[in-house]
Length: 211
Image (tube, rainbow, N blue to C red; front, top):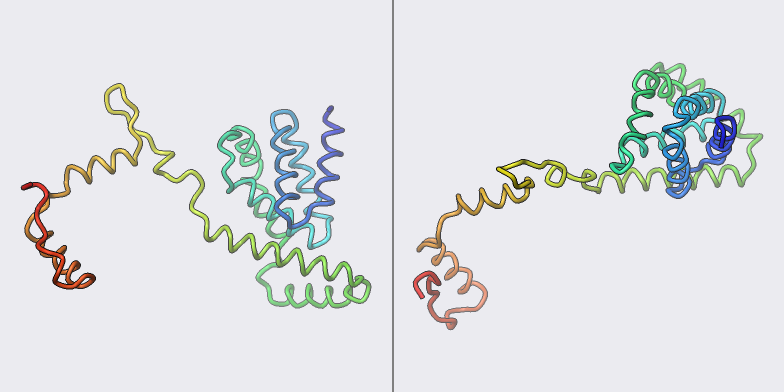
């Protein structure tokens, strides 16, 4: 596709963007696919829609950007980096367009405007907004439960000689070297646990290193 077609396709995706994981990932996949060719045009579409789209769509765009920059796209790191470079200066403007300012009057005026518009909103639109808010909140809870993508134990690698040693291997080797041999204190602990759970008839605990 030429740049004009890419722009039109992306605009169509953004205009139908909702809070579902499928919709967000579909939009991100398209943006990453053409990042090498039209990153500037695609980002311009994001800024344009953030400026003129309805409030619900702006929130969906913000969640889409959050997913683009925080989810694990290591296989497409150069494409993500292209958008990060464009977003560095623009994110404050996006936040201002999506989120009301800290000024209480601005928040109250925005709420009053929403109340005036509510009379013209259909019941199906209200239910869709409720459902999308629920979906966004669910995603926030899921993200709070997830481990960081590709944790440092996988990402960090150290080189010893000619072999590449992962941080997990290094940590295991350190624990192996610093952990003491089994001694009488360990045997006393095992005896106490055995008596606690099985009573006194299980027999003495022997040190396996002496067998």
